[in-house]
Image (cartoon, rainbow, N blue to C red; front, side, top):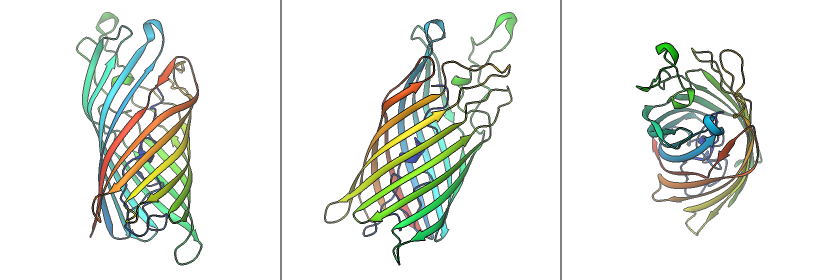
Length: 309
């Protein structure tokens, strides 16, 4: 739980917009869209997306056991000023982030702004003719510590009245984090195949806490359906390998990090020329997590709207 599960690929399987006759990697409406890894709007288009996510997870054992349930809303803006280049802005907001202690008692129910992300994506190589079948892109994103990282519950006081902070009750990590990605798509309408890798390099917050760095991978395929090309379905295999979290004194959290793979199903429908509704179900598959951790399916529902500037 404590490696900020799904920070990146929770994003990488979210909302995106679909163009009527070009459901392939060339138009920018790539695979399982969301961030600027496999997805971008068409040149001079602004994409406005709103997505909701529900997540539940547990970690630890005995008196160290804890769990969390959260409902998060994400506002995403993406703009492509020229072909092959796009910029993005993501603003997540927790409608609720409920934390439970080892007895199952909800000891915190925070809500508010989380960490904002700024990113860019560039297609460095396109091959295969006027409508390229092969596209290679690189991406970079910076996650900023905009979410509250200094929250203390009314009863969250240690020995002698010393204030203690539980990192996993915070709305933000309190650190500047970097996300670097490399993405490939192959388009042969009505099919699109895609693969990507992304590294997350985390900073250290003001209390000396460091979430484990992580490496993410995805491999997927998408198929456009119906005569109108308005419907698509996607299937993905995803993996996350994360290091353990480290406290100020250098100790590592035994119930954090490890390897987790997911099977992800997605579907989207084009309501109008510029408006798409999308749903995604991300299901844990093979895992080799450190200590006591458990994961549950993650559900996403969202809308995306494209407008030409």
